[in-house]
Length: 298
Ligand code: XIL
Image (cartoon, rainbow, N blue to C red; front, side, top):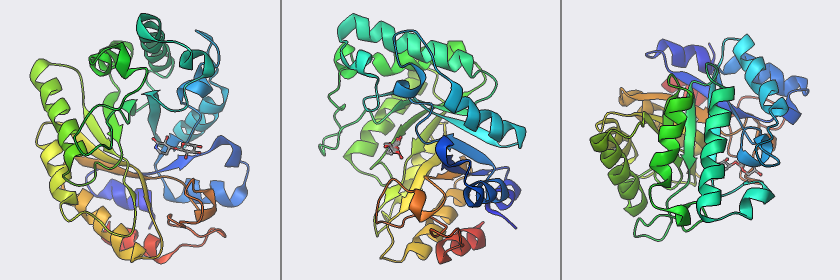
């Protein structure tokens, strides 16, 4: 079987990969993508700098390449990411205050409208919390427009695409810690006040150990009434990579509202984590023990 087909048999889940438009012409890469995965995330092509290179002027060519290719093969598309402090276009980096707020919400509205009906779930806001051990919001120009910038983004996204699942996405939130507690409090507050949020993405860029409370952490978010997804999974090679991949997969399957897993690339040589060899296929496209561990778990 394959990752996507097996995940689909486990309660209609998906198993996805981050895809780079520039690699689609590599036949080894595209063959693995088409054989194994039933969801894609554009690695960079749907970010703010790629989609709105100048104010209110949009560029969807490379994103469309990934999205239309995936949809024509029956794959899901996760949209990544509407607002993020990184990979903002230069012109938006030069804005602050109400000008930035308006530009950001216009971006959310325009991009979510363009992709309406094509995107299964959007990372509406990415990485808005700090790693200070106190659960603070990350200091950024977006945050300085006012603490309500996140809910404003979710409301704009819902209005633009009422059928997409709207996610908050972050890293270092994989176990119970100050940062995940802060995200948890935000999601609980959004649910209590009717701010539209449907899912939480856990990037799961992991080192050589898995937090002991990984599954419990996913479950507590699911218990708030949102789906949870592992959105950018990659695991450092050097510890027991295969065992960790198996454990992560089983944790998702054990949480009814964990609806899918996305790995952040296909072959180790495609990974953004140079030297970590953190993926399921080696540089020649061969299945690693980590692949077998995931397939066995599914
Ligand atoms: C990374 C891409 O993989 C790189 O190609 C790019 O240079 C930087 O961004 N968290 C995220 C992703 O949400 O968008 C990031 O992707 C990895 C960390």
